[in-house]
Length: 272
Image 1: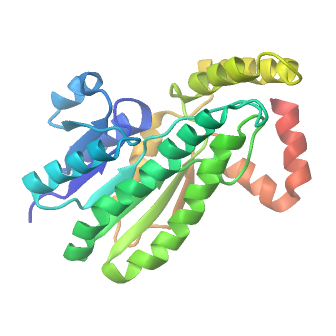
Image 2: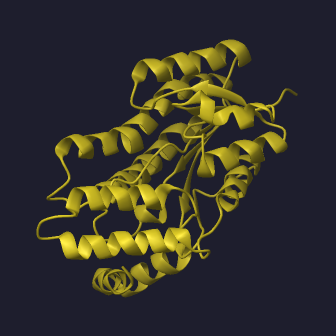
Image 3: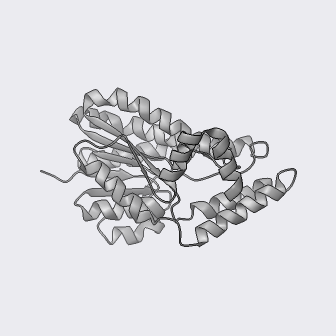
């Protein structure tokens, strides 16, 4: 039997890069997609196949998927990992940036699914992994647009699971907790740029500084943990619908579910 073919978005760094390496080591044929091919040359030396893709550009997504289908004849596993955190007070975030956050984290993900599902359905087999976050279950200060995208992907994934089950396609949600990547620094920088002045300035600066401190420290989980989780999810016969894993993921979601919204609000204000 030929190797299963995997397409991973957002594979130039962090979780996406580690997942590409993990799956290649497990015998998959791996296509690693990102906007910049030059940032994935180290993956190419490992036998992973870099491919250019921008999840906000429909033409680039179509071209990449068609290229893989032409070479391989199928895509067995889609890992929707591309995404970023746009932080800032909802009052302050420009609508253009809010739309971009939705385009990258939700609509780009959904479009990838639309493009890949026909070949999976034809083969009566497929695994779709949507990387969300514990931020699709809980919330933080100044992350309104980011959390909106992750909550949206959670709901989209649940509906998609029901739609695709009759065709032998599994839909899996991976919900990382705090992971040591560039994500936190990008989110903190966005927060400072957007809400550094005005009525939210004092609290926003404090939250941004704490984010940088957390992502500079050693408490957060490593991306390899999520990579191994993804690999497990796509190799077991009957995967879970959700994998909540990583620093503080299970405690935060558990406490919110048990003690409710107001208690979660107090905890977030206490530690941010």
